[in-house]
Image 1 (cartoon, rainbow, N blue to C red):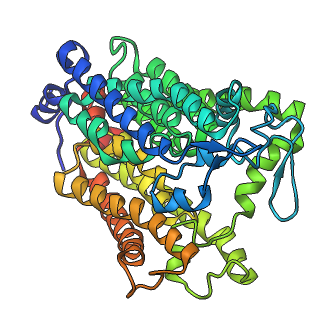
Image 2 (cartoon, one colour; image 1 turned 135 degrees about the horizontal axis):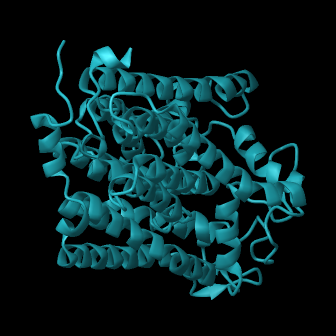
Amino acid sequence: MTRTAVGSVGTDRSRAALPTGPRAGRAMLVVIVLLTGLVLVLGYVNKARCTGPEFDAAGRSQPDYDLRIDRDVCYSDIQHLWLGRDIDHHVFPYLTGSITPDGRLLGGTVEYPVLTGLLMWAGALFAHNDAEFLLDSALLMAPFGLLTGWLLGRLARWRALVWALGPPLVLYAFHNWDLPVVACAVGAVFAVHGWRTDRPLAQRGVVAAVLLGLGFAFKLYPGAFVLPLALYVLTASRPGMLHWGAAIRVALAAAATVVLVNLPFALAGYQGWRASFTFQELRKVDLTTNSIWYWGFRPESDPDNVAFQSTMDWLSPGLVLLSFAVAAAVGWWRWRRDGVYPWVAVSGAMLCGFLLLHKVHSPQYTLWLVPFFVLLQVPWRWVVGYLVVDLVMGIGIFRWFYALKTGVGVGIYEGFAAQAVAIGVWGRAALLLVLFVVFLCLPDRLAAAGANRRTPLAESV
């Protein structure tokens, strides 16, 4: 099979279609950022409905907090974790922490990597109740949401409105501490394809790797993208040859970033630092995890079924890693066929594999996926379909929790809440499987435009 070099029509079209740099237009970026800001305000207002108007001695909103969070669909992990992690006592995270055999965290340790723990601590510094904690945390994270909108606007022009105006930003912007990690992941793509493109790809790849390492220190998942980034740098840095040194530097830069961020905490309080990872290892598959594993294996998936939970401890991560390997391998096949390693597309497919197969699928994970709808120009039917199903799930799951608490409308035939959960779980699962394939089949215009050369097959073997 014969293929063309860098001057091919296919590559030129990809480059022409890429709206980066000055062509994005200042007015367009202003509009995107302003709209993102407006939706972030709506997202905060939505969550703030659960705060106050009264507070108990511990700073918990009253009255009827436990019912309101589900009935009014305004629950957020931020507000909820004001209590139970010593956040209300302003304890610096991890240093004096530990975990009990049954998975209860003590001494300021939280269940997230260290940069998220620092963000939580900073958001609580001047707070005296869960409402102030939610507000201060929102103020800390909002700039990351705005930055993500700006970066996506630079990379994909008006398609960034999928981020700015999408329902996930209203539902989940302040559900948990996810805006910083999304900004890191999108920032890594921008570092390679939108920032100082006159610099060698090897240098831009190292900057992107550092950002992915920081993302790992927020919420882990961007760490998976280091592999496709390294393979892209390996194949695209030098015309007609594999640049192993550049690829290795990418991997080392990401690893060094993770170590440098985590090492002070590991040295100063190893038990507390390690407890955050132990918590995730001990977490069981249950009705709060929203995963196919719980709903697909009822009643065996009961949290008290030790055999099933033990199987999930290795089966779920094993299948996630297998999906990563499949995505990376398909990307390699596409490089041998087309001359460009589609690293952004492979990263998106990896994320789909994680969301589908991991034993926990928290609602706010949708924020991780939305930028790939923008960057890869996914067909609108899949974008709209996923956002609709996610909206049904995001509302239905909390209404169902409310039904469980009140004992009214719990069954699948008794009300829409239980039906919405079923639609959400299986609708998302089906669409994630489709998107895994779609991402790997879509042309990665960012990667194609940034490649130095389309390497002939004869030179790649």
